[in-house]
Image (cartoon, rainbow, N blue to C red; front, top):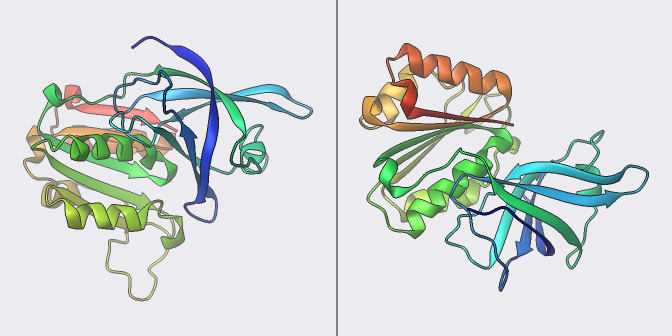
Length: 237
């Protein structure tokens, strides 16, 4: 895919969690082609800092030709996110891409598992929605780790997608609380979860996305199970 730089207009902004927003850019009539899982550079002028650029995986699939979505976490001391969290519908940003090799196409395999933590959900959501939009005959499994229940991004949407599509299974785990009524796991994603929840786990393609320590631990855990390293794809946030 050729890398294209263009200005895109903000179409919508929505709260995902207490510190994550969904930014939706209007791509209708624009040249925005990418492979599921890739990322883009977002740039804007920030008072006192000049032009600031950061890189974000798209959370929406390439099958959505009218929108380009990003799930972005606020870092109060960061250079870009405080500015973005004050943007309004109609504002523009320079968007450059696509980039990256954390990608999925139909030819890569039928069994796909996603191991995500926090805002690392974005490219996993993109790939999963791509598979569902294309009605592919996949086995899709998402193991989604968060510190607290109120950190879970897109929970309502994920639950609805898993109800609607029988080939998508979604499992949540919390690592720092066990709230009343919680029906998910309360531990870090581990080998027992992989073996019990991922169909044909030895013949599955794994996509890992999260903070560096999470991604490193997940890859090491999969390798310890005997998973072929060629079947493990890692993106670090």
